Image 1 (spheres, rainbow, N blue to C red):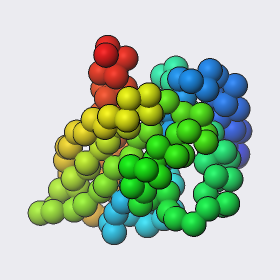
Image 2 (tube, rainbow, N blue to C red; image 1 turned 60 degrees about the horizontal axis):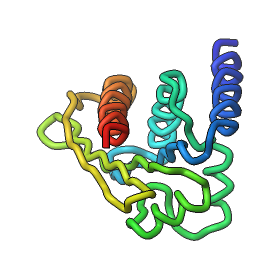
Image 3 (cartoon, rainbow, N blue to C red; image 1 turned 90 degrees about the horizontal axis):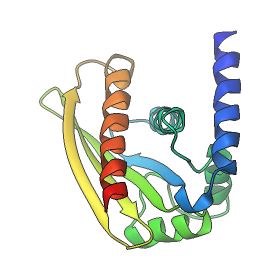
Length: 160
């Protein structure tokens, strides 16, 4: 029951995000990682999207992103700058967030990038979280920190 309610909330939030001004939308891409499975990456992406939406950011909806990749070769988790720029253009996003996740010495390291479609500039940041155990153990903290650092990057973009 909780899962159904959560799914409905996500669908509603994503519909609202799609209706927002496309020129302000953020595209949340995957995280290049051998540490995260495709399902874990999707969980991270969608939780970051949900967090951004609840904090008032317009986000490219999951279904638009899925459709975009359904019609192309390539992976949401491994995109070069030209591919990110093309995705922003086609999905009417002004910003794209992506990153890489690795584990080293019991810590999970995240390299997070914010791409600005209007200038072609990329801003990067990196941080670590405790990576002991499996994804279910460190995933919630990982997601919270990705969201926190994403908001910081988005705020720095707005000041420019």
